[in-house]
Image (tube, rainbow, N blue to C red; front, side, top):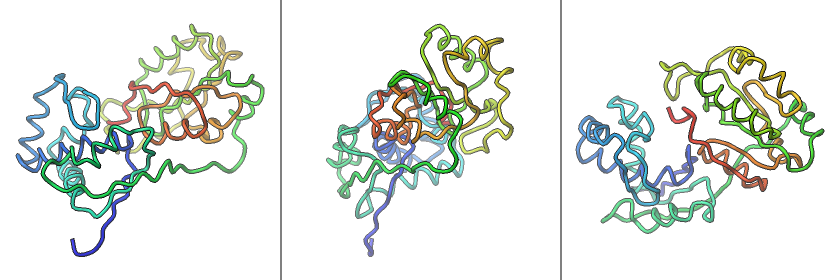
Length: 268
């Protein structure tokens, strides 16, 4: 490249998401998108071992990687071009994702090609603001470090059956909990599609009588809660997000213990 070009990779899942995708993109370029999609899809539940990431099933790759369409071509081209850049800025910090950072810096993702410098510049997260949310007033009345915060993000929607299974587990645990429940996404909706519009009907989604039985144990919030403020509250002791990098960074910055959930359709 004639001009210095630096890419900022905000990342859906931190640099741990970036490193395997950089290597997979080489497969797509070598064989073509249609052939590569077929090869990856045929692997099914077979484990993939790629630099910087623990073994995972091929079927767990983002849906956009498993579709031979124009969006996949754009997606693959982005990762394929990353080794050509003069630098890569990643919204993470090295101690959180040391294995992935080292794999990218050491050239393990693109053998035989120079890897540009990698700079960890995170965690960069937005702050809160505006009026005080009702859930913060509820937290004010709870003991220190006593509440588990469940929030799977704006795209972390679940089918009704799974919401009910989580509700049963929370009730049996008798643990204080703040739970954000968005409207469920239909099976026909994919990653990137608009989120369901109306506010979720909690009585229809959750087991009958759940809200009444647990009203002294926890609080269920529709659609959204101010994560930064909740995680910084003295009453919040643990955080259960998805594997998405942004939510993990918010929790780690605030000193919250995280139990990462892989149960959402956040990745499409």
